[in-house]
Length: 65
Length: 491
Image 1: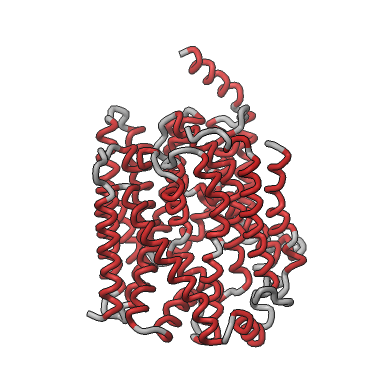
Image 2: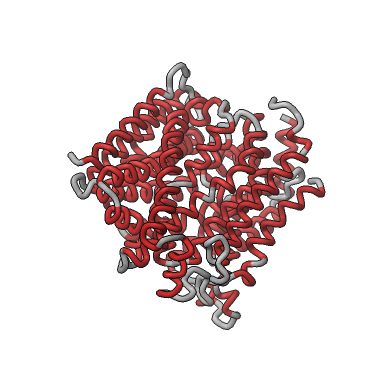
């Protein structure tokens, strides 16, 4: 477990930790009620974070064997 | 025969053809049949994993929840996301161990890690008890979809029989290869249908997504956020966490992990899966669009909102396309469930009590069990009634009870003994059963606690009981576990 893997904790904080503060309908962002926007935002960020971890993870440098 | 029905049958025939041709050129031993000879690349594993997530439940239930419950529906996006993050580390570890030890089923994993075939029997029973209601749910959904989309020209019952026979045939012949090929058609269809519906309906009826949400908000203030009580933020957090832990504990999901060619497949999927999940967003849009257009669907009827609104909006041929997509969402997971339950019963239950059975016999038995499991599920589909609903509610919590024993077994110095693992699973499963059947919530148990604690998912209790029993029994049996290890090392 490298330091960079700690990035993976961010979505847990974003989706679980912040839910009490973002539980509202307004403002609408990109057409979505705020709560839905917040969750969608974290879904997208999760992909980005996992891509960064993938790039930096030495386990993926080895061949496919 | 109307246009809708022709299209639905056309797709059924196509998936049956693809399912059967998938066998070509393969010698169907158990390893080929149930884990695809461990040769699937990123795309197939992706489709299998996705195939198990985009089930009839997401198609009908996702829109049904949006229609009936509103904001709490978003938990579905949350738990998937967190489960995919865990998958980056969890699945390669499971896959590696499974490959080294030539494992075929989820129960094999427990048998091998804890060196106890009887723990495998227990895990299999928990798995099958959770899987059959899940399959029944798919079949019921299939019946609803086909009956509605064919404008009643084919009955619910007939649709279920035809769908089940098609799945049974290709599962028996091609096993997981069949599921992978039908998953290709299914995912293309569902992507197209759901994204189209999710955009077309809000624009057609409301002039846009924001306009739709504003209209819903005007009619039902606060509906698209979480309520203060009940499905509140604390319910959301506890449910997302619990469901994420149980995510890969379904025997068919766990088993499809073995089908991968290499462990990088999972790490790649962990990047793409969260984004792919956003397809669900469009399913939600359909449910929200239906609120003001087909009002009055109460309770479980909310699951019909997508189909009702589609029938009201589109020509029969397009309703047929939607029906076909719905049919496929039942067939792909259905095939995986049939295969996993048959493998579990043949390899992890039957063989334990009849140790002389050869591998070839187990492989044959697993295949002949497919129609048996299918018939049992059909029986429950038509006769199940209320028991079924209860079992369904339990399903996810039941498989989640396998998580602690699995997680501990992956650590280098596992303090959990086989007795501890078994006792923990039994205690957890029993708690789930008691809590579900009696309808206890944390609120009824501890009415004096603050509301936010009362709203916690009651599954937490079962997991805590499970962990406590696992720990206590493991510590108590530690000596004998070590003695076991020594005999094994000496042997």
